[in-house]
Length: 283
Ligand code: L34
Image: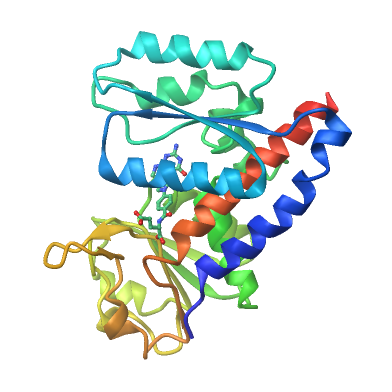
């Protein structure tokens, strides 16, 4: 069975739109999300466009600020400081990756933790690991929602995450642990990777290599969540980290790229923006 992330994202956005519809009357304004895009990376341009479109659908005000790849770290930090100080801004997102001359950690830390809709700020990361209320990173949050929507039991299951990034691999491993899965984080130095992944009842793949996961790596009946969004080197079309054609008959549930995790990332960003807005209105 294919878990349809596109469909679930539509229903999540529809529910959010219904809530946001009352905000102008209750709070005098709607949530305001500012996205900063540095450079012209085609993937980033496409994702940021998707975010603007979703914001419009939900009724969230959105501005995308495009800056040249040559922007200095200092200029970018100054822009963030300005947005931090702007009371009309509820969420600030700096699309990653950034050009190499800019220190991503410095930029993420500069965003006010109350406006950190990505959940990437060190304080939000700490809160996540301490199980304190926090903004959850969008992709891991979307993955848990996908699993729950398909009524997949997580508790007690063997979960294997391939990839150990701060954005996906590590936080999704933490969320799966909190759902009482037994979690293994595999990565480029893992020995006998196929042996490890074949143990997985739930396999989450976030490495960014096209069709990296082949049929022999998947246990029959496993749930396979493909986080990858790659350009197929042969056809130029989007494809995931999982060889979907080969794995779909082995897995019990599987996501597809496009139409899987990506749209859920964006829907969860909308939810996080609403959460940050409401928390700011409360203060
Ligand atoms: N700051 N940087 C920051 N926050 C994020 O949450 C992200 N991410 C990742 C890259 N950098 C970021 C995203 O937005 C990945 N990502 C993302 C978002 C959306 C989609 C994919 C990745 C998505 O919508 N994918 C569609 C296809 C889009 C297309 O046609 O290009 C899909 O169906 O998979």
